[in-house]
Structures are given as C-alpha cells and as structure tokens.
Amino acid sequence: MPSWRTTLTAAGVTGPRLREDFTYVARRVLRREPAPYVTLRLLAAPPLVPWLTAGVGFMNLVDDVAETGTPQERSAGLAALTGQVEAALKTGDSPDPLLRAYAHAVATRGLPGHWVSRFLEGAATAEAGFDGFDTEEDFQTYLDAYAWPGVLVFTGLQYQGGPDEEQAAGWRRFVDAAQRVDFLADLAGDLADGRLCLPRARLAEHSVTRADLEQARDTAAVRALLADETRRARSALDATEGILDLVEPGLRPVIAAMTELMGHQLTAVERAGVRALRKDVGYGLAAPVRTLLRARAGRRGEARRRPPIRRS
Image (cartoon, rainbow, N blue to C red):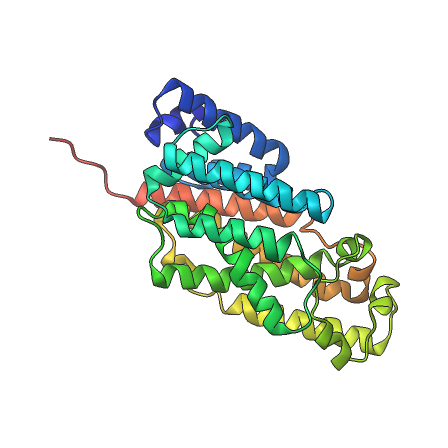
C-alpha cells in the first residue's frame, strides 16, 4: 500500500494547503469510519482514494448534522451547512478544511452539483424529520430523496464528469439493497432509539405491533414478518448483479468486497431470526478479514496481468 503522501501525489493533489486539507479529512474518516477507510486504502486505485475519502467525509458530516439534536437544531444546522457547502462549491474555499477538500474533489472530478444539492435537501427533509415509513412507497421516496444522492456524493467521484444515467441507476439498485440490509441488521438499536425502519403497513399485514418488535416477542407472526423482510432484502441484493460492470476499474475491488459483506450480513440476519430484535447483527471478524484478503490478492493478481506501460 503506497504512503498517504504518495497517494495524494498520484491523485494530483500537490498544493501544500490542499494536501493538509485532504490529510485532515482522511484522519477524520479513519476515526469515524475505520472500516471503509481501510478498505479504500487497501483496495482502491491510489489516484481515486483522496477523492473518495473526501466523499465519505462529506457524507458523514451531513449525516451527523441531520441526526444530532432536536428537530429545530437539526433544521438550523442543515440550513447553515447548506450555505457553507454552496459557498465552498462556488468559490473553492471555506473555513472548514473538509469542505475545502470536498469542493476541490467535486470540481476536479466534475461531479454535477445537483447530486450534492439533492443530498442536502433530503437531509433536511427525509432524514432530519424521519418518522418511519407507512408504506413501501414511502421507503422508495426516502431512497430517492436521501440515500441515493447520499451514496452518489461519495461514489459519484469515481467517474470523471459524474455518473451517466445507467451508472446512476445501478447505484440506485445498490442503495436499495444496502439500506434494506442495514435496517434489518440495526433493528434492535434503531428500536431502542425510537426508530422503526420497517414500513408500518407490512407490520399490519402480518398482524405484528411495534410493541411486539420492541419487546422481541418470539411469535409466529413476528418470525413471518422478519422472514418476509429478509426475502425482500435478498431480492434487492440479487438485483445488484452487474454493478461491477458500471464501476471504474480502480474501485471494483472495493465494491466487490462491500457487496460480499452485505451478503454475509444478510445471511447473519436470516440466521438470527427474532434474535435480531435483541441485538444488532454485525459482520463478525472472520468474514471481513477473509473478504479483504481475498480482494487484496485479486487486486494484486490483476495488476500483474496488466501489460507494462511502454514509454518512448
């Protein structure tokens, strides 16, 4: 793995201030999201790593503001952040090194600004005011408003000029699967925090109450509901097949690893059944280690198969 300084140089980040900005973001992401950061550093092509790291940092910043404090504090915080982001994207400058780095990434990679503005709008509406979903249609609206643009302010930076229509649609399928798996894996924690992330209409279809879930009641109806939800998640995960064809070669090992780990986590949820209502379901340790080692070995093998660059 090349050093961080070499990685910045490979991406063309040469100015001392910008290098400090990207280094600040990398340290912030490492503290908050060590697994994605390590995965990027180990598996992504070095020229992409600073841009994607800035994307993760920006996504985390918006998430944190949208989920912290009272509804009024969230609204005020997001309004202030939106103004700061708009100024940074327009001028390329900001008092915040994270926003400076992200603005530079957006400008350099040519990510269309509408993905950023959609994400901020979704944070102020769909996420900051989140009160669960009545129906599947409400869940899909949440994906369109917040989760889909949220993933593209990060992954969209892999494409010079931003994702085309087919690529964006592929990420829409990916985020549908990822969100379903995440909601199922975090059922216990979300319920403890007062968040119900399964559509209320589907609870009613199975004659399950919110109290049944909060109290982790092991009933036939609860088991049927969870089995139905995991089947939906499995179908959504199957629908992501072909996503690697839409990913830039330098990011394919990362997305392959992420998809494999989603599958591991969903399998763990399926095995847990009602126990998923008592404790959040993680990856465990062995599966991520095996996945990263296998992906790392595959990346090295592909690099050896590439023809050498001939210089005149």
